[in-house]
Image 1 (cartoon, rainbow, N blue to C red):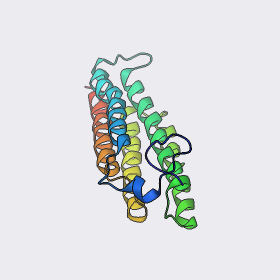
Image 2: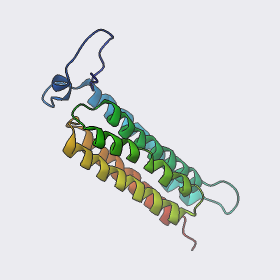
Image 3: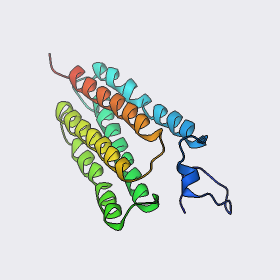
Length: 171
């Protein structure tokens, strides 16, 4: 059975123990650190967009490309949840797996758009994904730290994408 804590091979752990929010969760700190580290390009590239010139590749291009990559990355969470979470019926697993490809389909066209439109599309994707996280949490036991972390990461990513769009507006 899948668990949310790393156990060496041949070390069984039951799902109730793995999901109990009162037990220490070594993945929580790792997920938090990696998640916050993943915000560094957002918070660096948004203000760097002020330095954009009028020719060639720009910092805002890098910001929206990174946003598209990260939105595609977070969609994989639901693929993994669909395969591993205990307690999901087959219909919920299929819906969760189906949703898991949608953020990538939202992210890719953002690479072809001007900053304001790219920001709107990516922010929509991040918000929709967070809402799907909340919906899934009503039907499955996710670690207690997961939704608060996802909310903070989503908020910073969205604020950075919006800020990057506004700093690249023509004067």
